[in-house]
Length: 213
Image (tube, rainbow, N blue to C red; front, top):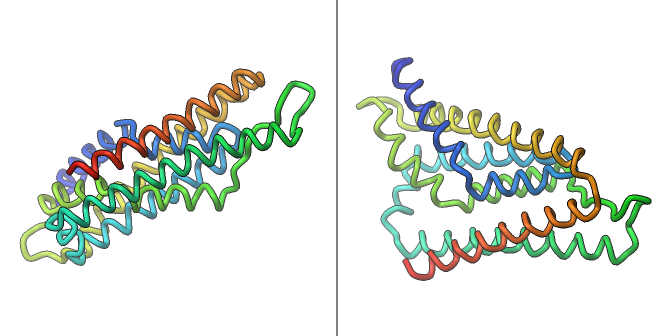
């Protein structure tokens, strides 16, 4: 692969990262009260992307593309996970408020651990079939004929993972800084509920799309 080809692929990856998706909203949600947890989620998403790259390299992702039934169930599983994240986040915030976890300014903001953030990011990407389809549609065009398919797929996967991680890390830092300015209890509660609702709606949409495909 030439440097020009690698740069062209990196440009495609950047375009993909800039399109808001479930990973973006998830990182935004987790980062509201702890930037490190959001960055961990970004890292988990990158690891998930590398797993998809390995699947393509081994030829397993091709089976996914040919099996509409398997694709449908993975979409539904991904939607269920997003719905779970949205609903559980809302419930945890309500329980924290009901338990009296409050400061003099208002309720104590919900905090995610780095381990939980990493796991959420990785599982979200692994259950997102669009990542696998992206590799299936684009990666083969950048693998030279007769080359090492697995090695090249991993190089391209690493490129996508690094670009995605950097972009999502910026999102995490910006979200955290913004929350320091918007720390008023009413504003914080509103953002908690809106972001949780977005995750839940995305989950329902993915499940509906999978059920009708």
